[in-house]
Image (tube, rainbow over all chains, first blue to last red; front, top):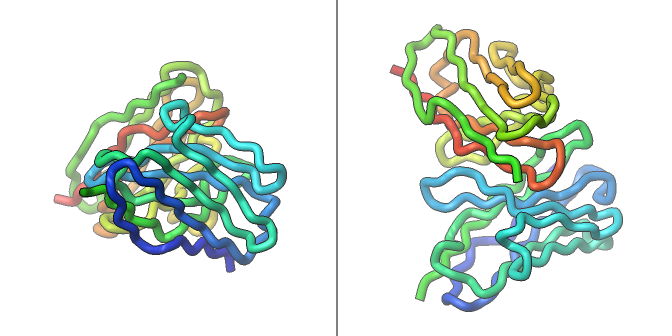
Length: 118
Length: 107
């Protein structure tokens, strides 16, 4: 069955970087895009961007350009999200999700809580 | 960028009630709209894509309609397990923006 398993919770100081992994299985990794979404405590869903594991093409929400890097490893079928220059308002649960060609994200990782605090 | 809005922001209804949530896009997005359900403490779940296509396994009491700039999610008979926040998301082109969410409670 399709699974997306994310790395564990992390605590970072302001100004640091964090890298969240998303290990996929159960489907051809290069056949579907991977979307990253975050959710601050008590807030709604925020789309961060998308990556194609087929060719590495990315499309980032403008507010994250320059601070976010999305990558994939087609050997291990893993997607990565790196967020730099962390601020307290980056504290959130970060989700990866597998996109459907027909639209929407049909399979989600369990989420990774990133806490930014000094 | 296209902005997504939802109304109401929250609602409370009785079991068996018909519930309707509206999502509006600031520009025409065709039928490229998805709906998600997020239960408290859980991962979002895709309910509907392409405005009206029910994702496999989703109960038939959920339905979606609309095109262009106005869309609706309807729960034909609200159940206790439907307590959740519902989000719309455009999926015509990036950025795939979410709406702010509608919180649904059962009276």
